[in-house]
Picture (cartoon, rainbow, N blue to C red):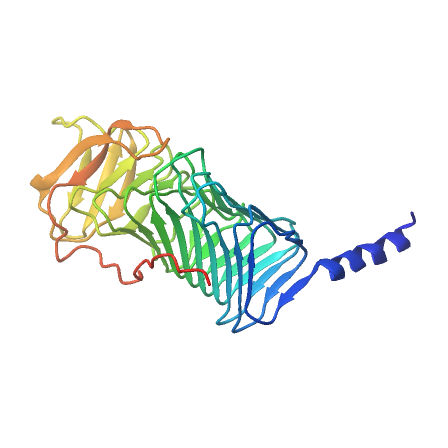
Length: 339
């Protein structure tokens, strides 16, 4: 077939499979949802219940005050949701919720495309007790100005992946609950990453810098930060450090001797520095910490992330009043109910 015949055919397919939702719509059970562009018009919702496979081969646009919900209400159906195509876009000005929390089958959420912009609220959830959930939003141009939540009932070996190659911009709120976010890009913006119960942020490469305006908030005693030791030194803005949560490296800290320190705390500047050999990483935790309450521990980061002997430091006391404030952070919200 000649090229001039193929192009009109491709355009026709795109038109046929594009879907615009203009009124409240609920669909249940297995449906054939393999569409091009999906648009949910402002002020309406589109709810899909117990459809195992949802594929969008075009762009996804959820308008202001609208909602796009894909949910599993049975233990037998785990959700697979994919947005394919390197030239497609995701824009959310309303609410997106992919909810597989009731299913014992691990979900797969693979959202790619050229760009991702979230100005609204977005939730991705699964069980995690069986197999390995996949939760990735790997658009090349990546911006979060709103609220973005990743949630598991049980911590697993799965990880959250955000962005691809280029820096991501987080000017909003990212929440982790029983999840591990493994950094694969630089992080720009003055937003917040809240590390909730049994969750970890893993900074893998200091060449992919994290903005000092970005706050990492350790919300729970079981929250953790792991930073690659074999990389250039950075300073990370950390709120909520105390009550036994963990800041650590990928290598053991120095033995505590006359000549070597495993860590240093500057009471004047509020910077905690972890030291492994010639490598250091800095954490702006704030002032008011009592030096005798810091303790070097074996760093268990949860999931399949390797435990590092003498790899971290905990603070065995309450969070002091002078600690770094979580001023950029918003409360993490529970999963919304689907219509």
